[in-house]
Image (cartoon, rainbow over all chains, first blue to last red; front, top):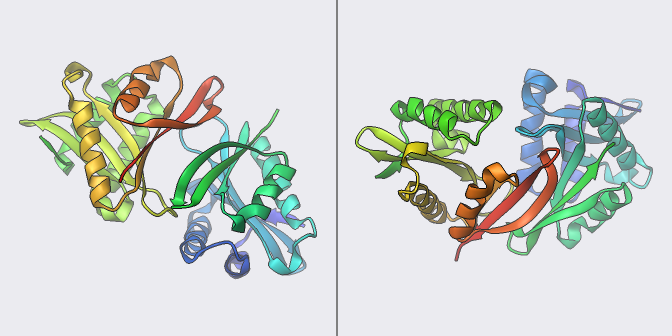
Length: 157
Length: 157
């Protein structure tokens, strides 16, 4: 079941981020910071919405998206992560589809997912392509030397 | 003379943004918001540094830059604007050069300037190209339908 994340999901979201295997310390810390902002001021106040895939009381994965400032109808997929123990069960696809539907309901024209060009993110990039995203831009050596930024875009309607 | 902006520069910075002729209401408001954050918590706290070109007590133009989260050595040029009455005097070039020098002193490897692909921004794009920037990416219809995002990059060292 996919639902808007609530405060009690926080510890499981943090644990999944840490265990996902693709996020460095600074990125794990960044998820924690925006989660705290989301809990304290809400999605409207901070611009981030967190959704979770839940099975009973267990969080299997989460996604976080929000509108890009100064654009008409562009949304960013800031984070998406699935518990490594529950991958290949369609949890990621379900979370991304739910994000896309929410973005479209909010009047979004496109969803942008920025990711890394390194081998560590090969499965992530294949996931976006499989979900209908196009790599529309690459900035070489962006995150660090040898670590490109790849901008995936899915356009709606 | 180019210097770090101080609180008393605020009203002239706002006036230049409004009179520059290329920023919409939402963008003018965005400059005001980050300026207020800069004044209240400082450049280190908010991640934005404002610099001004000054002649006596008059502000001729300003620029605003800061490090991009989750990257090693990428800085964004968030805003650059020159008083329309004082253009063609090299004020913009001076501000951008000073920004680049500050970025390099801070260990920056590249400065990224995102701008619009519309005719209104033709002079801005020519300015970046003249300053040694390369349009490394374009996302069609980004700001709105017909208004592309163009990502200019200058790499140092």
